Length: 167
Image (cartoon, rainbow, N blue to C red):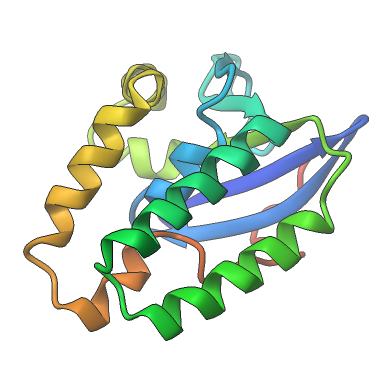
């Protein structure tokens, strides 16, 4: 198992690769899937259970942009580096306009602590309180060197191709 979280978008009946992140589910993924979130069956793992999350694409993008602007205003990450990544993020996500949903596949991460079904239930609850997740993210940044903080956001690796192909 690769121990990654995978983020896709759904356009009509097709899935579009968005990003993957090693060993955790970053705050950006949580924010992107945080609008009108539903538990759904996985598009990449053969489980009969609802071990993935789906959220509204357009609303998720707008919420992420607002978060990134707030993060910039707080001055917690070197501004030049953050500005560059925000621009890359906007350029990549604007190409995906027309998608209806974000699709978060976190089973590999959840299975560190038990069955994916229970991990997904916990993540769904956490994302339903996204304001608390964001506050916790800011607290986590306190103990991290400023030049290492960018990696925690999850906006540095947008991709058109991920490890798994979707169904």
